[in-house]
Image (cartoon, rainbow over all chains, first blue to last red; front, side, top):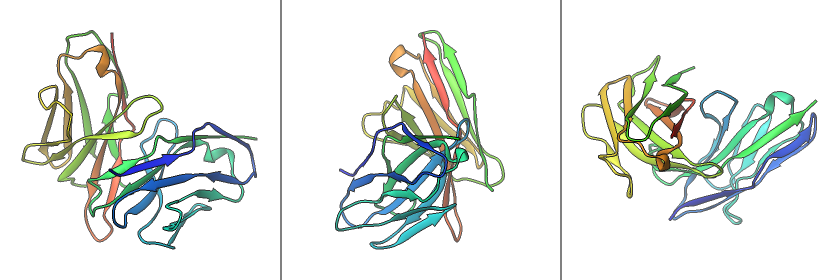
Length: 113
Length: 116
C-alpha cells in the first residue's frame, strides 16, 4: 500500500538557518504530493502541493520538488524564522478528492532566535 | 480563509463512558468530512469518511459500533467514542472538504482523548 516516510524530529535550528525536511514515498501510479503544517493549537493547513513529476510547490518561502526518480518531496526553506516553528506533515493522495490522503508521522521544527 | 472548528480540544473520561467530538465547518458547507486518529509519533490514520445524510464509510479495522459518526447537517459531523477504554486514548482530528474550482481540505485543531 501507499506510505510516506519523513525524517524524525525534532529539527532544531537557529533563525535564518537553511531547512530541509526529507520525505520519500511509496505509491502506485502517480500520486499528488503535499506538505501540511500544524502550528501550536491549530489545525493542519496546506502549505504546498505538487501534482506531477518535476512540479515545484512553493509558499511562504518553502519549496518542494516532486522527484519521481527518487520518489521524494523534500521540503526546503532558505532562511527559517521563529514563526516557522510547527509540525510539518508530508502526505500523498493517489486519487482525486483527498479521501485517500496518506500522511507521514510529522516532523517538529523548532527555531530559536 | 475557511475554518473548521473541532470541540473539545481535550477530554478526560472514565473507562466505560462515551465521548462526543464535534467538527464544524464555520463558513462553508461540507458534504464530506473525514475523521483521523493519531497515536504519539505515528501518522494520521484515516478512520472514516463522513457523508452528509448517509452512512459513514469506515476504513478497514475501524469498529463502526465503537466509533459512531453522524453527519446530520452540511456543517456538522460528530464522532462518538462509545464505551471508551484506555486503548482508545489518542489524538482525533477531523477535516472538511470544501468543493469548488480549487478543492481544498480544512482541518480541525484536534481532540486529545484520555481514557482513565
